[in-house]
Image (cartoon, rainbow, N blue to C red; front, side, top):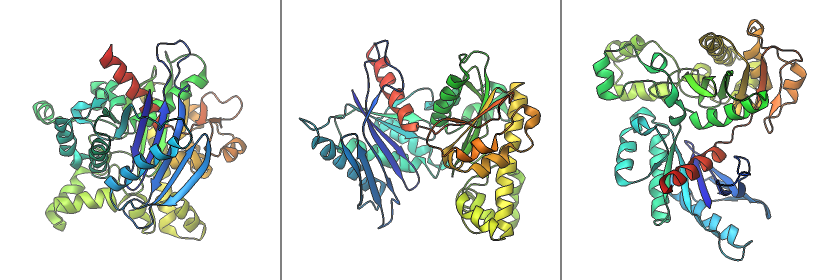
Amino acid sequence: MNILVLNPGSSTLKFGVYQMPDLSTASATRDSATVLVSGIIERIGTPQAELTLSAATRQVVSEMVEALTTAQAVEQIIRRILAYAGENAPAALTIDAVGCRVVHGGARSLEPTRVTPSVLDELRALGSLAPLHNPVDVAVLEQVQRSLPETPVLAVFDTEFHQTLPPVAYTYALPFELCARYGLRRYGFHGISHAYVSRQLIGHLGRGARGTKVVTCHLGNGTSICALADGKSVDISSGFTPLEGLVMGTRSGDVDPGLILYLIRTVGMSASEVDSLLNRDSGLRGLSGLSADVRDLEQAALDGNEHAKLALEIFVYRARKYTGAYAAALAGLDAVAFTGGIGQHSASMRSRICQGLDFLGLRLDEARNKTADGHADVKISAQGSPAQIWVIPTDEEQEISWSTVEAIRRKLS
């Protein structure tokens, strides 16, 4: 079975076609799927949109494409996948099912869901809860159904992994009836990434999930930290929306709800203006006044820019604080893993976050940390460190492929 995986971002669209093994065989594991074609379209919505595509039988190809809309990007990917693979096979590659990452699943977060008109309506309604993601996700799903009308399309939710949160972690201190009526609770996000990385991390510990206490740090333009007991998510920094928690590229993370009321009542901002402020104009970009990219801010900080320095310090402080809080929530800590664009590629940010966490048993080996390039699983804790520290590149596409094929198998069994 060949699964097309689509992983939309706000201006990017990652993709891959996975040839899945027979799940009934003993040799079928999550790393036994074959990647037939993979790639990404970047800078969607601009005239500079670029598609990078690779397959096992050919070199990487990069070309400028017309992708002024998400729908055009999906069309470009599907057309090139079929043509590209067909050049290297007796017959054109077939797509048996499609799995697409959807950030906010709301009440539908229990499992991957076959996309129908009613499901699309529900996901559109959740757009205001994940404004940087869900509208794009819906646009991808709509175009896939137009391009591949006979192919099953499944939404795989970032929120699914966090359905194991206990009530004490997901319940807001609001009137119970209000929460029940409107689904007001902490859902958590980046679940696909946390699921993959935590599985890899626990595998490295070499003793099974039972009894483990680990923290996974997904640090990128979107950020979240997850606490896991026995391999299950028991707390997550993001909440009802992806806005809660850590400082992010353009999102504020935690703010006093009273501050929002002040902006509306006293400053005179509208709800939509506050929405845009907190989601698009805050975080690293808002703090620095320069950029949402840590690489830009690290260079600016070296050049003496005080706003860039403070932005990085706040990002680090918030990440360190949540890591410590989750060690307390777990009543111990076996390991921490860093992933995401910042977590995988910025040795300096990993080092700064780990500073002062020796009391939790987290002792960083600076030499190992500097050599970890984010392209392979690397242990960066010092020899004899009571708790391990790892850099683990996330693979959301692989996780989506397995979630999709397992959901199809359950429906057919």
